[in-house]
Amino acid sequence: MTIDRQRRIEGVIALVLFALTIPAANWLIGHVGTVCVPNGPCLVPVAPGIAAPSGVLMIGLALVLRDIVQRRLGPVAALGAIAAGALLSGLLAPTAIVVASVAAFLLSELTDFAIYTPLQKRNFVAAVAASSLFGLVVDSFVFLWLAFGSLDFLWGQIVGKAWMVLLALPLMHLLRRRDERLGLAPA
Image 1: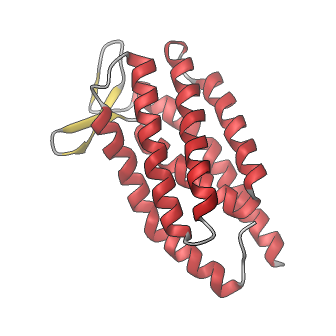
Image 2: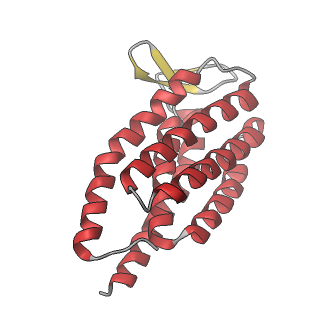
């Protein structure tokens, strides 16, 4: 298999996984948690004494996967994935949170894109970490404010998404090392 073909296949896999995080997040927020707030989200513990809407786990992962899509398929594909993801988010979100879901998705993914793009050529892992952390803060603030008119779960959202990013960083390091070994350059 050629290097370009391998890069495209891995990019498509990351794109599919990225797309799957959107319905997963929307489903989790309404169905899975240790507590489900009436007319609100289902919550999961993310740290001692801190709970967050359960969809946070998928959103943290989505930010990292978007970076991989860009690394494998290029910035145009990443922007296309953001647009398609926003549309999918709007179609799948519960009616009460469609605007919040779409706005948070678009703004957080575009923030991630804007930070990741210039940094990734210098240090891929640092670019993933920085872009994801900024993106998750934007996502958390926008989503909670628009969906619930409250920032009550802000720290829980940030911590929950940060866990997913932190768990992914060692894998990003291994991916970067593998890319170097194989001569697999970013798209």
